[in-house]
Each structure stands twice: as C-alpha cells, then as structure tokens.
Length: 167
Image (cartoon, rainbow, N blue to C red; front, side, top):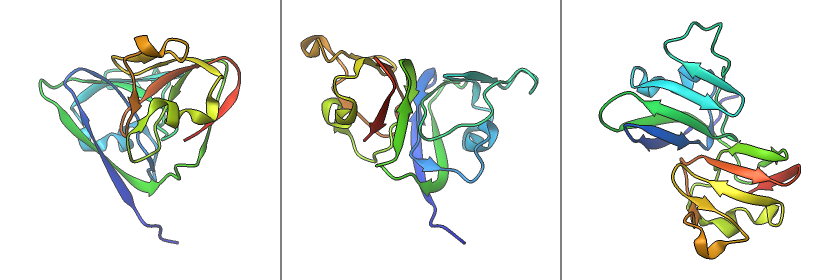
C-alpha cells in the first residue's frame, strides 16, 4: 500500500546543531536519512551512540535515526545546509516514553508551542529542558531562556521518573 509522503526541511548551521524531525523515513539508517546533506557533516551523536563519517562501520554505534529522538550533528561546511527528510508524517499524538534521567527527545508538532503547553503531559515529572543554547526549569521560570519548542529542534529533557510524553 502506498502512503502519502510528507517532507520536512531543517536549516542546520555551520557548527553543532541539536535537531529532530517529524516524518518517518522508509529507511532509517543514518546515511539514508541524512543523504540530502551527504558530505556536509562529519559527526552525529545520539543518546545511545555515535556515527562518524571517518570511522569504520564497526565503530559506529548509532545505526538509525528516529523521529521520536533528538540528535546532535556537526556540520563540516563553512555555511549552513538544508536537511530534507521525506517520509510519512508521525502523528503528533504519538507517545514518547521517557526514562528517569536525561532523554534526547524529538519534537513532533509542525508548529511552535509555548514550552509549558508542549510538555503539559509530563508536568511535574521533569526538572530541566535544554535546547542547543537555552534552558527551561519549571521551578525557575523567570530565569529560563527556553520559552518555546519548535519543529526541527531537538531537546534534552531530565525526567524525575519514567513517564510518557505526548505533545
């Protein structure tokens, strides 16, 4: 059965980026998902592994990229690049299980939301949220710099206990 394909474009700066995507590609291998920027990146970090273009496949422990997760990627060019990922749209209401501690999380909505709205389903069960260069602490909202969550961005969420995130 053929499914309707969707796509997402993500602008990545010429440095480290923390990204995620909201479509399920038909092939989830790192090289295939990042094929639109082949040669423009050299390192991808996931919560449980690493993918380096310079390493033998035996040492690359990050084998696939999934929409529910966030990833760091280092762009090796001296200019930004546009990552294009195609696949079927992942329902915004999909559940993302979080474990106690730090979780590298993807962002599934296709619109920007205030952080308190986006994380309403886990309210009271997390201590911190980090983006690439901002943070949110529910106990210290006046000092927090991360006020919104948006498409294409990845996040690190520190959960107090196992809990399920639903946007």
